[in-house]
Amino acid sequence: MRVIITGLVGQYPFGGVIWDYLHYLLGFRSLGHEVLYLEDSGAWPYDPVAGTITHDCSFALQSLTKIFTDFDLAESWVYRNGADGKFYGAGEKVAREWLRQGDLLVNVSSAGWLRDYDLRVGHKMFIDGDPMFCQIGLLDGSNPQYAGRVRDHDSHFTFGLSVGQPNCPVPVDGICWRPTVQPIALEHWPVAPIRPDAPWTTVMNWASYRPKIWQGKEYGQKNLEFIKFKELPTKTSAPFRLAMGMGVGGHCPTKELRKLGWDLVDPQEVAPDHQSYRSFLTSSRGEWSIAKHGYVEGKTGWFSCRTACYLAAGRPAVVQETGWSQHLPRQQGIL
Image 1 (cartoon, rainbow, N blue to C red):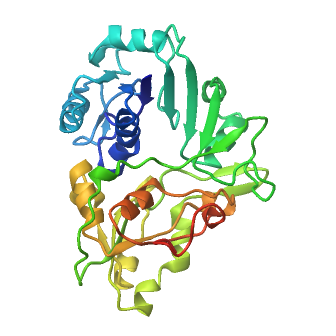
Image 2 (tube, rainbow, N blue to C red):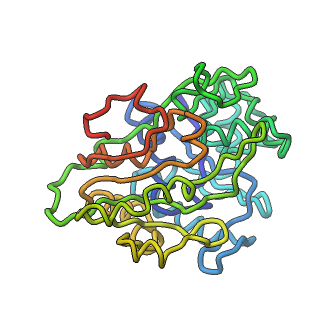
């Protein structure tokens, strides 16, 4: 088959974001399929040096060239600049031809806008990586164009393993959401011995975006769950090292958390790309992590693609319950 994977690697060429999309490309390729990475989100490029959007996509192109060359995919990517509509990489002709004659489009987390193509690909698959928030966005009227794009697929999958089940309050509104988990290319996560002094780690944002409200109830971010565990380092001798982004508004209480014993580091310093991200995870004793408040309150059954990487590298994980234990084996590396 000819499989097109959408993504945001050029927009956010950092750590785990790269692996989120790359694993799909590597997985389908390992199964013998032809793959093409297509980044056409409609977004203007992001300049990490200036910390703002820009018309210049040079940083995105440099990052994409490096990343895909590292994985023998140098001729298998297309990037479209949202500022002017120009195509780069394999180019416009390739993108349009694949979307017209390809067999499968995998639209990961609605990364593909696909607004002006002759879209006749055999099957359009949508993968939701943000359960509860994605479904609220379809129904709250905040972005009708987004809602229309999501619905315009032949099948819908979600990392919320419980979505659609009676005890899960995530609104489905007629969409048949099928459960799925992040694929992992195991050959890129070799198991190495754990150092005796290795800390428990994770990579996270204090708050990725503002809460969403559904039927009068607020569904928030990781900050709301983290405060339940903020005194954990005072109750154990185990070290905890968190690569934590400040999140929306930069309101993370770093001074307070450090006083409580958390070793907080900047994810852009310790895990700025796919290689350093993997090194950060594999240098750990294991993962300790909480989930977004919305995943927990929504009883979504969400399971982290990052946690899957820890497990692939032979690292155990202690992660917050979202309902995932109803679907995945507990006490086999995961608590």
